Length: 327
Image (tube, rainbow, N blue to C red; front, side, top):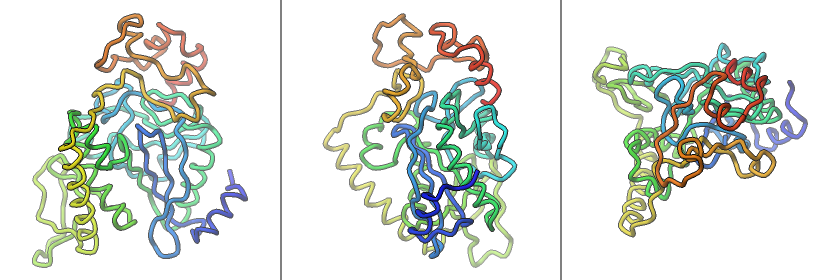
């Protein structure tokens, strides 16, 4: 699929070469996917924001096969992870589990960004959207970029959102992701990602007094490293400003979001009226419609006997079979 004339014109307006690198950011709570592209200055600029048609699970990382959680974290996409023959029109495999996930005993398979607007642990777009996103990724990989990065977040990691979710048990994990987010937002450069001591580290740089190259063991102790001051300085300035704002919001006792949404996943509001019934209330599954303020995730299964299919007939048989084949 070739890029449309409109998209090619947008690239030209933004001074972005057709084959320059891209970077993708995903935000669950806002149900948005951003495509960033490198311009002629070598920095990434926002190209386009796509409303996400469907994602499943709740806020928080994917832990195990069958939990319906869409992954969160930093993922490296190579041409081998691009599938032009997906049952879901086109698909980009996130590569979950990555080295961080495996070091923390997280498992799952075939977690995708794909079309068809059905999700079982994936980020599902419309076919038209994934056509554009796939083409942008393909063109970038045909250039000098051997891979591109997907950054998947629970929400935009602003002080206000972090304050709203401050009681969530995933907060330490999200604050770790925020370091990489801050490196990118402060510099508009793709953060270099490594894993050691079962955690992400960003933009590690070999100290001048060490001659041996840095080696990172995902489950081993982190080696001594520094961060390039050109990256560290603006990132720390952003981090400090965010911490001041966060502390003030907590002091003002801003409202706290529920830990569980009570829904299986989300959908951007632009699709809600067009595609009713795609978001399944977990309360209906557990209690036949009784209202519960906080609910643990439903133990979904990834086969034709899924709870969505049993309780609601949510998927016709053919759709349910295609659902399993891709996710």
